[in-house]
Image 1 (cartoon, one colour):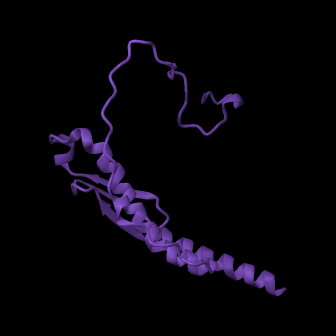
Image 2 (cartoon, one colour):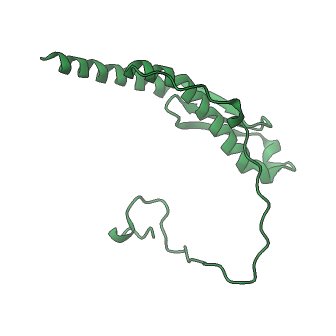
Image 3 (tube, helix red, strand yellow):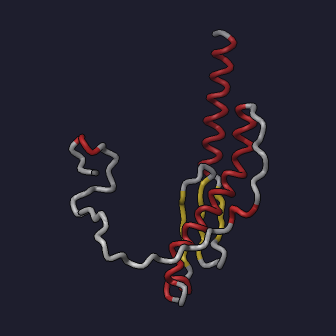
Length: 143
């Protein structure tokens, strides 16, 4: 076996080991109000989502979606920050410059626009299957 093949096999083995470690690693994060908890693997896959009853039945129920997105994003950012040095070491790359902590905050929700009197481009989505990956022309009926 030639040296490049050995190096490739070694890298593949190391990548498989890293992938296995990332699959079992867990990263937990919360929404800013601490009412939503998300847990992701080191690969960024969501494995647990907990919503405090105060978020579902309290006065801030309309902000629940934002809290969920925020908690999942925070957990994935933690997973990425943890796994990036390991990935860089495996592939021999320099780490990227640190990201500012401002990314943790969600942008403000824009105010709703008033309904216009002119008709919008309304589409009928009743027969569309949003859960398939098939292309529109393949009979999947996506678009």
